[in-house]
Structure formats: structure tokens, C-alpha cells
Image 1 (cartoon, one colour):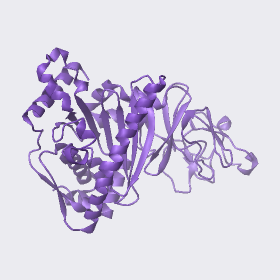
Image 2 (tube, rainbow, N blue to C red):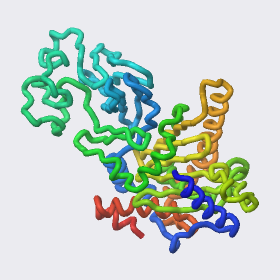
Image 3 (cartoon, rainbow, N blue to C red):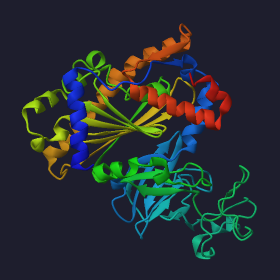
Image 4 (cartoon, helix red, strand yellow):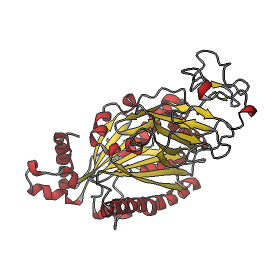
Amino acid sequence: MERDQLIDLTRRALKLARDKTTDLAPAERRVDAQAYTSAERHDQDRAMVMASPQLVGYASELPGPGAYCTKTVMGRSILLTRTADGSVKAFNNVCLHRQSQVATGCGSAKRFTCPYHAWTYDNTGRLVGVPGREGFPSAAIASAAKPGAAGRRQSSAAIASAAKPGAAGRRQSSAAIKADGLTELPAAEFAGFLWIAMDPGTPLDVAAHLGPLADELDSWGIGRWSPLGEKVLDCPINWKLAVDTFSENYHFATVHQQTFATIARSNCTVFDAFGPHHRLIFPLNTILGLDEVPEEQWDPFQNMVVIYALFPNIVLSVTIANGELFRIYPGDRPGRSSTVHQNSTPLDLSDESVAAGAQAVFEYAHATVRDEDYRLVEGLQTNLESGARDHLLFGRNEPGLQHRHNAWAQALARDWPSIGRQHRH
């Protein structure tokens, strides 16, 4: 982000802090309690997430050719690789033989050997080795495959040469398996992050998805900072309740009285929408000190946290030394969700004390979300499921919260009209 823009956002945040107020939505908004408990809505939420471009990690997690990492998205294991030409590829992490995962964790490898029967794949996804080859006469390994054949799917009775031209990417029955490689998913490295589409036949246009926010996200460089790992929270809360906790700071003074509220102001937020996405600025408690400092000497990042909400299920938090990523997924029922929490830093992790400090900050943030935010909203989920009240109320002082739900409602109304009508008010 350019300094002029940072200064402008700091001016806005300072004025709100000085006036002891916050950016406001035009009106209050009621949300149906069934949005968090309905099985029908839950199915539509899962479909909405699955159909959207998915940010799954930092580009720095694949630092060079031969690097790989595995991710879990709504119960599906995904393998990402960086090939010899530097491009990023993604695959369902599922062996063609008996569906074992062929890779775990992250690292560097040119070959992936299934731990069950040693079927082997290269990092472009091609099948390159089958022990007991005589038992699988129809299997096409890479050395015998025609150029460009990788990625086709065919019936199990004709895995290799029987595929018709143009069959690549075509959907087939559940009995079908891919001819000579792992099922490839659309993948891209964009704005410093790794992106995939969950459906092999779905185009992936991240630039169109992000719109005017793309350049701003890229300018931070957080996707190229050093990754600090992943922590997972599987919780008895609806995924939207999890997302809601990141959508306002009205709760800081009560929920985070001894943690985040000692650092950042409560009920004070700069809000800007970018289509279905939005940005929040949370001023730090130090910001009022800028009244005594000339603007040319301002250091904006010492005085605010930047939060991005990316449709439909991603939260990014940017500070002077951390680039946090929260990937929030619906679970197997309305009252379950999974949050994958990652962090990256621009600090030099070759210094052991610096690395230990960065990990300590990561653990502090994770523990706060786990023990304060998510533990509290477990009670909300219980109340919602009890049916005691039929709606929730979002205030004018919660514009980010309102925007998230408006964006979801608009998507549902567009793609699933009967559901959208139920949740637009």
C-alpha cells in the first residue's frame, strides 16, 4: 500500500478515535437465527464455499522448484507443488489405486510414492511407477503416455489409450479414475498467495475475484514473508459465527479485556467495502499520540491493524510484524466448523531468538482466538440451536459484520434464490 493511502487511512482512524466513534452502517440489520442452524442453509453454504476461489496458503510455502505442501479444505486433502519451471500445480491428494494420500506435510520432492502400494507420481502429477505392473494392464504410466495426455480422466476399464480427444477435464461417473496422473485442480499464484478451485472443471480467475483489492493485497508482500506454520481449530460453532468474530472490534473491551483490548481500541473501526470483500482498520491505543506528531513523521503501522475479509471464508490480518491468515470452513453439520490459522513474518528467522519471539506471538494470537472468541461463541451456538429467539441484531457500529452477511445473502439469492429470499432481511 502506498504511503499516501496509509496516511489517509491513519487520518480517518485518528479522527474516529479522537471523536470516540466508529464508521457506521446506514441502519441496524436483523439476521435469521436459522442462518446458523438450518441444515438446508448449511448445505448451500458448503456449496458456496466449494464454488469460490480458495486462498489456501502463502506463496512462500513453495519457496522454489521441487517444493510441495499439503492442505485440507473441507475434508479434502490437496497437494500443491512448484514444478521445474516455477509454476504452481494442485491435485487431489488421492492415489489412483486405493485412494491413499500420496504426500503429507510440506517439503521438497520430485517424486511422491504412495505409502500403501508404492504407486509413484512426479511433481506434475503424472503416474511414473506401478509395482506389479502386470496386475494393471490398463494403467498408463508417464513413459508410455502421449504428450499432453496428463490430466485426462477415463473409465476404469480403459484407463489409458481409449480416451477420446477432448475428454480432458470432462466429468464422469464416480467409478471413473484419471488415466495417468493425480486429478489436477486449477491453481494459481496471485497477490503473493496460493489459490485453487475445488472443481477440476471450474475456471480460476483470481484477478476477477479480488477486483480492485488485488493490487493492494499484493503490495503488502505478506504472502512472500516467512511462514510460521499452521494451527487448526475444530469447534462446535457454525462457520459464520467463527467469521463473525473477526468482523468487528465492538467486543474487544469485554471479551478481550486482558488481551487485545490492551493493544487496540474497542468499538472504533474504519470500514471500506470492495464488492463482496471488505477492509477494516483497527486503531491501536497509541494512535491519539499522533496528534503531537507531524504527519511526515507518522509511522502508520505502529498505530493500526489492517483486517481483510475475502469472500466467502478468508480473513487476513496485517501488522508490522505479522501476516495472519484464517481459512474458515463449514463442518459436516451446521454446528461444526474448522479454522486453519496460519502466520507469516518479515523478520529474519535465522536468528533463533527472533524465531522464538515470532512463534510466541503466533501462539498468543491463536490462544486468544481459541480461548476467548471461539469459547464464548460456543454458547451462542447453543442458544441459537435452542430456538429461544428467532433472530440476531447487528448494530450500525458493526458495518463489517453487516457487509459479510449481505455478501453471503446476495450470493445465495443469485445462485440459490429460495435460500436467498429467506436470509436477505
